[in-house]
Length: 319
Image (cartoon, rainbow, N blue to C red; front, side, top):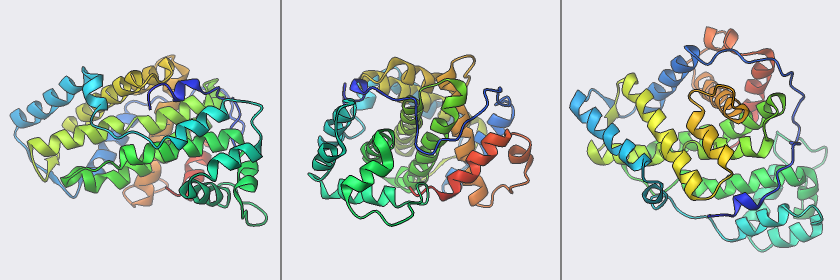
């Protein structure tokens, strides 16, 4: 994966992205901390147990040690199929025709199916069904195709061959990653952040969480600490792992920085887009799981009207 994402020339437009006012979003704290705690409890409910403080500290120490060694962290996640970076390089060429892109997509039958399926999804809502790759590429546009290919590239990374609880948690983590990426890309224009960079940051943020859960499972097989304070520390340390891997893979520096700062976005617009997308995606999953109601204060009072519309849009996202 090294270098390939850095070759792209992202465009500021996104498919079906509504205009957003540049008004500041509500503070992520303390509501953001509450959402993280609720999401961690829901994510780990099937394996959460009471764990001694010294064991929790040992797990966190191991995760933080790995966060300081991006090269070692990167060795724990798989690489992507070569056809994907090849296509992404072509997408950096503004003169590439839809016919040429379709020819490259046609090299991989899985990609053909994915592109057509995406064009026919509820997100794009075509008037008539899209039946071939070239028509699908026209429907998606280059930015939409770029995002789809990035998602295909990341799927095996998050759904890595794990064991124990990490394996059971992978589908939910991947679901949150996709929803976070889309929500972050929708937040980006109103914050003057890059749309594609925001999408990449959303997909990348949870890679470190999968690595951290694998480490936790090795230290305490079959279960994870139920303590929400531990959960907050684990999420923070896992973001550092994700940021380190992103740097090791030569992602754009602002993407890696946004992941590292998403817990405290400050004035960094890309970190703000990621933090808002992460929050909206977690709320979507908690509402869908009936952990929170649509009228819960975290939803009703914690989001702007645009963010609530984004929350609704995520309901139709297939992962």
